[in-house]
Amino acid sequence: MEKAINITLKVWRQAGPKAKGGFETYELKNISTDSSFLEMLDVLNEQLVSERKEPIAFDHDCREGICGMCSLYINGHPHGPDAAVTTCQLHMRKFKDGDTITVEPWRSNAFPVIKDLMVDRGAYDKIIQAGGFVSVNTGGVPDANAIPIPKKDADEAMDAASCIGCGACAAACKNGSAMLFVAAKVSQLALLPQGRVEAAARAKAMVAKMDELGFGNCTNTGACAAECPKSVSLSNIARLNREFLCAKFKD
Amino acid sequence: MWLVNSSIGRKVVMSISGTALVLFLLFHAAMNLVAIISEDGYNMICEFLGANWYALVATAGLAFLVVVHILYAFYITMQNYRARGKERYAVSARQADVEWSSKNMLALGVIIVLGLGLHLFNFWYKMQFTEIMHMAGASAGDIALATDGVYWIKETFSQWYYVVLYLVWLGALWFHLTHGVWSALHTLGLNNNTWMPRVKCISNIVSTLVVLMFASVVVYYFVISLI
Image (cartoon, rainbow over all chains, first blue to last red; front, side, top):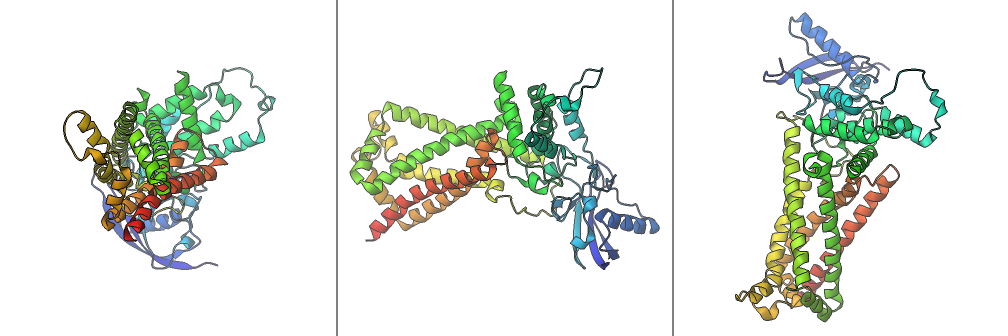
């Protein structure tokens, strides 16, 4: 059943990476509860454009929860108050008429603000470049089913691989740590025979890159897993620790 | 050196020093229980662990662990504060399954260190330290009472304010350990989805056991002093 609500938005506005930012307050009337959070922002931007004001910059792409592009720290939660969804999958029916909603960009030293609600998450790409891959020689493609893999391992690898690299883990972490992301990326490959070959080198390279980029030290608070839109499990971090320590002890 | 330079290495140092300290607490608490069972037995332990070379070596090792644990805690917290960035969130909510203690480990640690200072003044200073000074030829405190642990327990816990301070201290220790024990195992990689609830359960049992053993002595001697 369609319903419309009136809300007040407090949005972080910042002209550029070096500019000083601050909150702006906007009133929005008649927002359909069936619209997604991003559609609501589209309505606001239309309104701003018609008033000849600068629209709010925010990241988005697929709008179906798989690309990892949308971000936004909504009322103290990355991807909003709903569990296991991205911002684009968050609906306005989760809010009440008359609510004031505070929208902030990810806050982390390694994710500098580009403009308004947009942050540079290139740090995650650099971590992937450091080791989040499997090296394969060119030539005939081997049959994927030629290597038997236990269902349990395949499932766990798949669960880890559901990480979309949105950055919510580092944004939620009080330590600004990227451990859940790195743990998911290391796990998805370490659990499979194809990824085992480079497992030790990968764990070392990705952790070294993560530290170099200025992410914090994980203290196992679990805020990352609680806020992860893909429900990536905290035990991946234990696996990363295990992989890293085994690799170091072998040296 | 990866134990200093890498984030996981730093956490391993916290984990191993912390685990060693938990083992010490279990040992210490078990010995304290003797004070309830037999006063003479407790004083025998006090004599055995007085200014003897093995007790002094163990004390020095323990002090080293405590210092390492504290220095790393401040170093890690400082780095993490910086990693969070200059701008802080205007609104931050708490997540249902995030323990309160896990976000306040440093604050709890500071309370524990303050309590430790008081504890060293109440007991260690008057017992092992007095013995050491006596052996060095200086006179500090009453050497006759240096191995009379029960005397100092009675002396301290007959005063209500020490009882309150010690119980608050033990409360902070309980919160610190409920997160610390399972987190130490997690950091060493000894965890998975099946074991997650188990290690958290073990963590709660260990911390409750330690705190109950210590607290029982405090309460027992406070009640005795009232009778």
